[in-house]
Picture 1: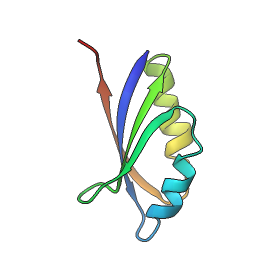
Picture 2 (picture 1 turned 135 degrees about the horizontal axis):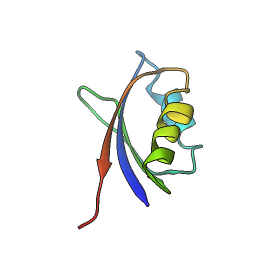
Picture 3 (picture 1 turned 180 degrees about the vertical axis):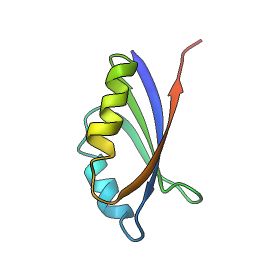
Length: 77
């Protein structure tokens, strides 16, 4: 199992639209709005890191209004 935290920047005034589209992605298990450099943070679970990358590229970055993402991979102790 792979886990990632995806920091998402949106185009101006697109935060709500992007948020609502992200809610439709089943691999996103948490989603929170932010203040600061990034507009949203999504916690994603996937079967492996290859799948995590595909979710980011094919599902998250494909949403109209997503300007930039930064992926932080998680681990368990």
